[in-house]
Image (cartoon, rainbow, N blue to C red):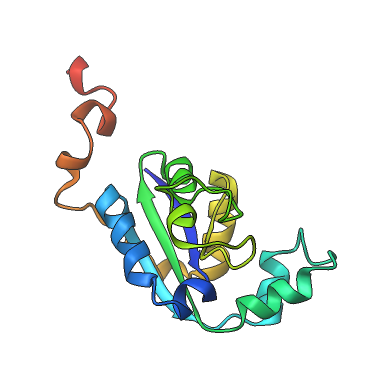
Length: 160
């Protein structure tokens, strides 16, 4: 199964939306396999947002990401990178579809409550940036057979 990386941003933490977001993740059937609260610093943000570090808006972005602690998570599921990105919605909350996290819970482009990895490759990089392998509890949930069909879990299931 795939893994993806998520940050519940200061706009989520300060507004008391952590439980709502985590609840929606769990209700969807996505498994949380690592979670921790941490205070980001400028060095970590320069590394994480290296593609934006030279942009004129980066200082404001960094300031907003250091306003409160954040909650970092690793999620697991089939196609979880794509599925969670769809759950998140458009970057600008004002343009995000109703039913998405941003469409329901935010009105901003920058204070948009959550970061989600945009590819499997970036998820691996971001997970390694924020988590030591010993912090990831990769387990099989007991309700797995109620989340996926047998052939989704094992493509050879019906060939046996």
